[in-house]
Amino acid sequence: MTDIADSRAPETKSGAGDYLDLKDAFGEFMTTFEAFKEANDQKLQQMEGRLGADTVTVQKVERISQALDEQKRAIDGMSLNRLRPGLGDGERRSTPERKQAFDAYMRSGDDRALRALDSKAMSYGSGQDGGYLVPDETEAEIGKRLSTLSPIRSIASVRKVSAAVLKKPFALGGPAVGWVAETAARPQTATPTLAELQFPTMELYAMPAATASLLEDSIVDLDQWISAEVEAAFAEQEGAAFVSGNGVNKPRGFLDYTKVAEASWVWGQIGYIATGVAGQLPASNPSDVLIDTVYALKAGYRQNANWVMNRKTQGAIRKLKDADGNYLWQPPATVGQKAMLMGFPLVEAEDMPNAATDATPIAFGDFSRGYLVVDRTGVRVLRDPYSAKPYVLFYTTKRVGGGVQDFDAIKLLKFGTA
Image (cartoon, rainbow, N blue to C red; front, side, top):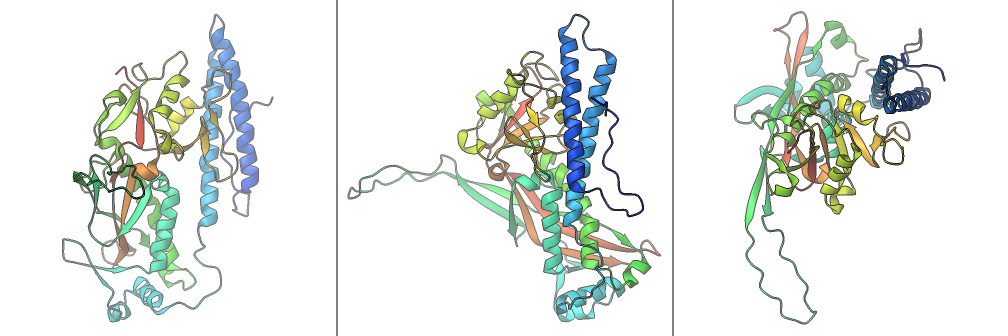
């Protein structure tokens, strides 16, 4: 078979500047995966021999694995670009009063119409901020794109609030339930012991810059421009916070909570399964610890569970086989779907830690029940034409919180002995 170890991510068509067709790119990705399996099988056969795998084969496997990662990222980017509306389509549509007023503020700084609409925004806890709320369509567009770009947000529960803090009560002993006959007296239930989880929202900001020519170009939709400029910055900061944020002026990530061995798990902590080997998976039957992690999760949570790990960890997992010689990692069935690991979707989150002694680089669970993202309604924009002349800065802020809401729904795999 042709050696495609130096395969690269899909490139753009010359002259046209358009991405390769998604179908063609996905076909190339699947061809690379077949080459990866062939090279890795050859490596495993060599390792079973007396001399072990030769350096050329090992390097070939690593190059093809890197090519797979690059092609998958390119395909994801192409899929995402199809969702992004153009900055101008040659046709001006009628805009409502609110959008016209915001457009005038963005282009020239004229805020009279916005003030007339009484849309001045106030920043929580610090008095007047001086910014203006973006139109509802723009806020919805930012939220829609973030749900695709931000890996944890894409699988977590998301709740919108108008207050600064979401307070969620829960019963420490679970709900009081039982069976009773239709005409029998209902026994009095014990008074439940309640506790409260709090999810404060913290300010997240981005500051895109625009040129005068961009602002003067009437065909450019500035709402869409703002959405496109801030989405990557917001998603990057969110991704890090939802994984490992310490809860100080940012959401609290699920890896920041106390982690304990699954046998000692109690509410308020995240349980883990240890690999038994410092910094790596076991050399013999490494898939067994993945199976243990799956079944550490209760059946009700497994139905909607996802694996979460970064690219490097996924590259190592991709080489594993089960007892029947089948690869545990399987590519997406179609464009836009996730890769599968042992029958469960795999979410790539670059903010997950790398494999190291006592690190927890792999998470598994029902994040829709386990992790809660809290969005405070309203995205504000403050126009600043002075700080970076001749550019105009747009200080864009939103408030986001997050934390674990069900400690039984997320399990970790710890690369350690205990």
